[in-house]
Image 1 (cartoon, rainbow, N blue to C red):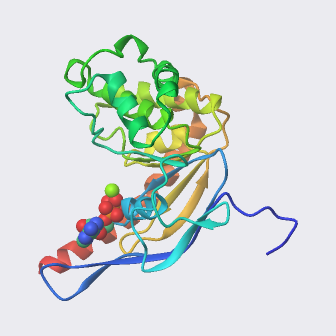
Image 2 (image 1 turned 180 degrees about the vertical axis):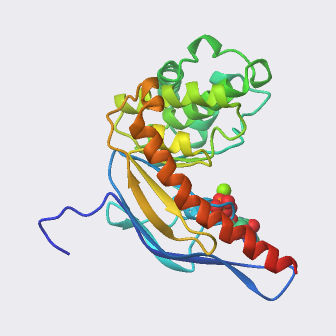
Length: 273
Ligand SMILES: Nc1ncnc2c1ncn2[C@@H]1O[C@H](COP(=O)(O)OP(=O)(O)O)[C@@H](O)[C@H]1O
Ligand SMILES: [Mg+2]
């Protein structure tokens, strides 16, 4: 290693994984030799055909899954188990407890992580205010919209004050307008914090709008096929979406993905025949 070049913040080194198939004695190779360096404070998106291993890689990064080969280093230490104080997770299903209010959902999370009780209210209030949900602190999940639930899930992750957030299709269940507004809010939030975010998304527009870099995955067995840089300051303005630059990047992503999705569909057809 060159001593003049600082080591990467997160270093994914040749991660490969296969899952045993329950209905046969075969295994399914999901990821092959995937390597990526992630910079501190950036937002990087993972985009790729369904089933190419994006969530699997995120689970390895979160310490939830040990890969069959390779490893992920965080500041030069291998990630081997979950550590929510450093790495928080936001899933597609927001997994709020329906019997707790929004505020309680956050403080329950803090209790799980053994955060001292006297810090709970302050942390929860700050996180709710950061996502614009303070007025709904005492509502139950059933009483708020889908977009608000995802904000609450994000607030729960923020309240842990981890410096890394892994988001697995957090906006997938929402309608396009809500996603757009949440995306703009996230961009504003990011510009205020130094958090490092890894976002799995299916939306090309969302990837371009939010990311500093977009990693495009190949068809399964997945690996990173190409990385696109989006050089645009945060917070991104809504007029970025109508710019030539935005559309150029989106089209570039579309053609990269199109090839991979076609490969996925033709291999599925072969499997069925
Ligand atoms: N725990 C598991 N056991 C067996 N197969 C799995 C498991 N988790 C994921 N898979 C399979 O691995 C492939 C990749 O899954 P995943 O990483 O979730 O893909 P993506 O998030 O890119 O859509 C899929 O075909 C999925 O069915
Ligand atoms: Mg997934």
